[in-house]
Image 1 (spheres, rainbow, N blue to C red):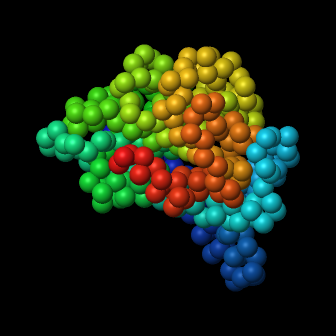
Image 2 (image 1 turned 180 degrees about the vertical axis):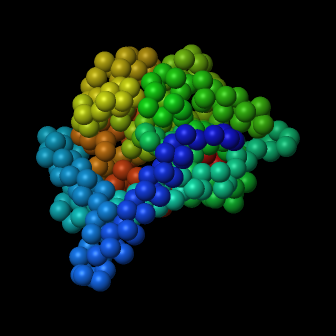
Length: 302
């Protein structure tokens, strides 16, 4: 298991600063106006939800010409509320403070169970996968969860990390693994597949909300990996050119019409892959949807 996560340290600092700022505001204003004190503290602690709301509005308008049926108003509202909660759980708890709680699980001797490599997305670490790690451990499925670093580096730097994980799980099980990827992790897995030049080294690749053809938000990023995910940008086009139809048939791609990060929504699909739509789920939420987990585990265990 990775013994270092620079992202965890950054997020720990962010959580502590916001926590202290909200508590300070609450204490300062409480005697003068309890209502103002509570409102200000909540705005400090949950202000990110306003940015999420902007993302959902952008999804609704920027993706209106997409081939996937647009989300209904009720779906967007429910997805926004769910994403507000999950962002707090993932980015303020699991990733900064709990990312090492469930270590990698490899058999001591070669087993007949196929293993899994879990690859997180942008501004995430292995703590993102905590619910998945519990499920895999409960089913005695071997797994390795990586940390992609540098956090804001090029996606082309990540195949080395994925290669090490694939080697570990293959040596431990004697079988080519399944890769399970969220968001940018799907592009990192494809970059690894391009570098490996040997499709037999992976049994199947499952992507969840991955911007296979980029995303509308990529145009606003100042980070190297963010710019690489620009909608129909040069980097994603070069990656697409390297993917054969045989390799594409090894992919299962989950996508949602309420994905607030990867849109237009159809950009999360791949021609020739098993593309599976789940309605009404936001970007982070999609990774933990019961259907996505259950059917993905079925693929892994098949």
